[in-house]
Length: 169
Ligand code: XMP
Image 1: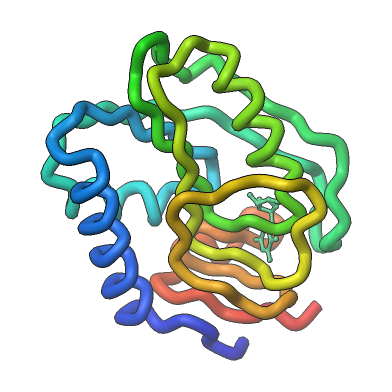
Image 2: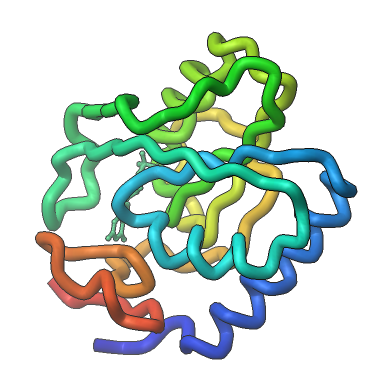
């Protein structure tokens, strides 16, 4: 597999993103809502840099795409989500591809009377977005290839890798 982003590249960028997020929220309490399962590494590394009062919430989203890059039917589970009313929410996902998942979650969270809602992604695939969506924080723009590692999987494998690599399908 070709390594696209080394563990060092990722750690450096996540620390920079945390600095920007901490500056923007300036001591306000924030609720980070991570999209399982891909957000795990990004979430765990980011929050350890954040010197802010914060809570962590989780939800699960999957689009049954398997190895393909065509999004399938989106399935969302919200059982793990805490009460977000009146909270400053930062929605966190591993990768922005077509934008379908985050656009849906963005619309849903807006209905929960949150005080504010921002979006952070580690990766954005260039030239793939089909749904208009404003992303407030993004780590890296990457080419349109299937990537694994640092939370991203192929059939639930490779998530544990500390780097991001291109998987040749
Ligand atoms: P959309 O199209 O809704 O997709 O923006 C977001 C979700 O699709 C998955 N995805 C990938 N997973 N390697 C992966 O392991 C990839 O290259 C890739 N592209 C999209 C991922 O679950 C993401 O949250």
